[in-house]
Image (cartoon, rainbow, N blue to C red; front, side, top):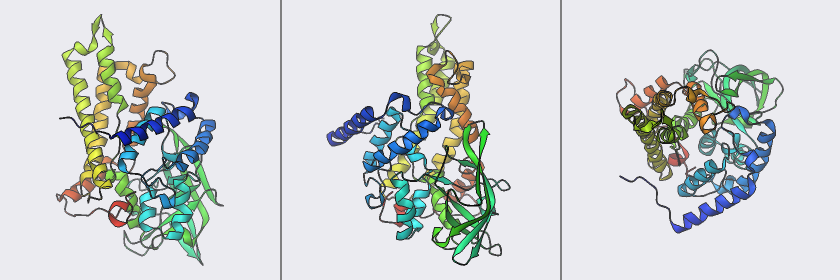
Length: 408
């Protein structure tokens, strides 16, 4: 069965427009490196400026509302843009962790959308997600960092770990405990926090997957009252709108698996003792198993994306994609090692490295990032609740696809 997406003549013309602009405006030396540790501060700030140009064309967040600075384009346009951005080496959307965008569309007031959503969509500001705490990890309902009301303001105390982002941000977002006497799920508020702020400290962590993550420390950080998104006891509900997307609930317009594409190329083109490596039946089977695992994951992502953009209620489909992606990615990196051997462990700076070091980078990133957005166990619990085999059941949190007039 052919799952290829056919494009109309108009869409192909749009593709040519995007491709031509990228070729004319993105120098080779500024393309996204294989290893994010090689993205220099100079490149970061060059891209901060370039992203404003891309946003002005409506291509940075193409399917978000035009009235707030998005592109107001269709899902088909977003698919084409993602294809061409990947081809041209454009790094992630404005360096912002985009799961904040659904929460702002659903929960923010019009004034807050102008204050926070618009500058993110136009690339004026970068926002990082502030969720994980050292003592509770992925147990978001066990949040201990406090927000205490002081007149019209809130005063924040606490700390976070593994907060992802390159170099600098302008906003942090996430929950704080606003009522220690209230029950779980009713004791949190959700805040936008300006960076820098007095009493706020960000410390870079040097981890296996790079230097993109940080410790965050709050020492009497004062936040204005209009930085609270939703009510002061609605933080759990706002957070779950962000988690709906983080757990796969928006799908992906253009899933891509360079690791598997590289594996197929390697098996086809590598000689071993004068014989093509791909003629070995064990190598054939291992490579095809990896391809099928990856292809299933792509179909899950595309299906959920189609449902999201067509405003169809998504019950378990996003979580299924999340669980499968977490587990299949680890199976795939093991198969890559089985076929490529030590060549799969050469980094981007090693002589003779295949594919610019993409395989090593992928394996190192997967080792850490499978805990992002909550552990695999939490993803399985959410999936079990959605399909009705858990002691408790739950429905999806509101998203722009289901709760607003905007698809996002």
